[in-house]
Amino acid sequence: MDSPHPPGLARTLDVAISATGCLLSAVIRDDSGTILSITVKKGMATLPKLAEAHAVCQNLQEAKSRFLHCCDKLNDWGIVHISRKCIYMAHNIAKWATNSSVVGCINPEAVDGSVLDDLTEWDPGDR
Image 1 (cartoon, rainbow, N blue to C red):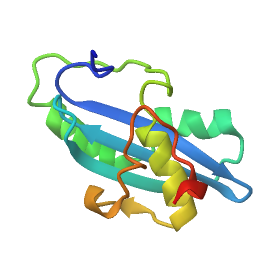
Image 2: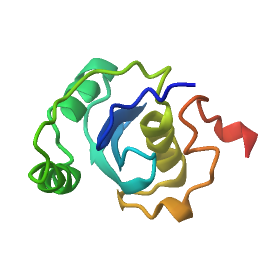
Image 3: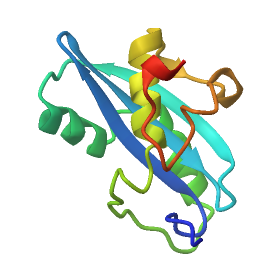
């Protein structure tokens, strides 16, 4: 099966909404799917579209900085929208971080493998 990710580096963003705000997540992977970075940041938005806009505007400054540093070494790079149905991982991480009260840079080894699944939405009840 073809990978839904373009060759090179892939950065995926998503959010999880709660009554008190949101958590924005960013995942950077290389072209073999190896996770290079996971970052989660708190946001104040409680409306999904507003929270998504914050994610798109790259409010995750630490992840943005690492991503741009990596891109400086590339000859060609771009930003594309990929449906959540093809890459659940960033969404799953945002949900997991909300459920686990975790923010900041996250070691991928500290996250259950089911959260890091691209093709299945993580259900906290499945743990």
